[in-house]
Structure formats: C-alpha cells, structure tokens
Length: 137
Image (cartoon, rainbow, N blue to C red; front, top):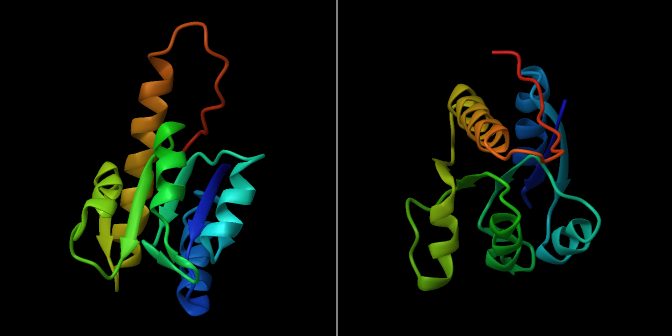
C-alpha cells in the first residue's frame, strides 16, 4: 500500500477523496487541512504521492509543495483553479492538475500515473534502497 498525503481543508471533499483512493486500493491517505500541519508532518514523513489543494485553512501551500517537489514526491494538484495564477503558484506546475469537481476515475488515473512515473524514476537509480509500492492496475 502507498502512503498518500492528502492536503484538503474541505471535510466532505477530503472524505470523498480518501474513500476514492481506498476503494481503488491505492493506499492509505493521511489528510491534513493546513500548511502548518503538513510542514510538521513532513518533518518525519515522506509520502509516495501527494494530492494537493492549493488553498488550505491557513493559506496557500506553496511552501509545502516546494518541500514535496524537492523530495521528488509526485503531485496531483486537486483544486478549483484552472491554472497557476501567480508566480507563487509556479511550483504547482510540477504536478498533474485535476480540477474540482473531479471525476473519481480521473483522480484515480492521475494518482496511478504519478505513482507509475515515480516507480519508473526510482528504478533508474542504481544502488538506491527505495520503497516502491506495488500497484494493482
């Protein structure tokens, strides 16, 4: 099972995304609703993939996205925004964008694609002891 970080501050959306990911057997999602919570969690954890809403309870999560990108964590940007609108949002161009409201199959496909790409990149690193999740496709 994959370790998925879900950054979402709308409770109903968070529950639905968690259920969608679990039903697709993609992994367990840790849901956090603020940038501060996410940065604290990232002090001791690194997810296999992150599903990120740009705007959380305490503001835009560009600092969180920067940490994730620096660690090579694939991103699914799950937001109502249609594109990056400011220079701060450029970090989110490193992810696959899925606009809300989203089709559950589209979200599953985006997460699977990110995981497969991450798995391929990890396989290219000789001598690295990296956990790569097994996906059921």
